Image 1 (cartoon, rainbow, N blue to C red):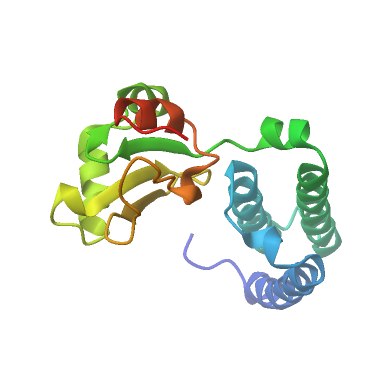
Image 2: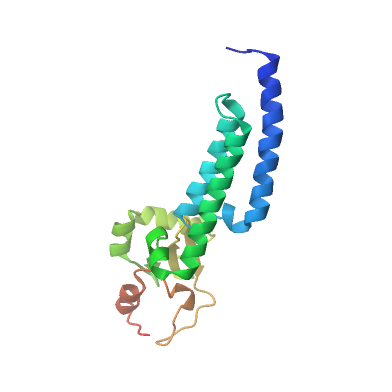
Length: 185
């Protein structure tokens, strides 16, 4: 239970060094996007790579070559999904969620809160985490494609009827929130 053999520890040492080295080389070859967390699929790949590394290290039933092959397969699949997403809007919409506007110019966007299953308290917590003490200091709060929450400060936002909040162009719920705020594009 506490110790089986020196051979098992030596196996973990050797396999760990080789598997880690192989993973680093694959990640360098496939680019930074492989470990990004831009969307749910990217997150799944990152978690799966960690799981494969742990299984390769600790399970004597999984050979080093099997572990390296699994790394390569996941990196290849992630590369293929990213490649297809760039070239096909339909494929991109299949694998990637759109960001959602949760709060806009002093008002919660209730349909989006309900759709995304986010509470007002969680939005307030994100505002506080972003250093916003006053609700008036917040132009918008967005639930990003990776599940993180972004807080857009109001300090540099253009004022008036023509204000467009251009970073919010592809965010779900934007039109409803702008209409409710009395703004038009």
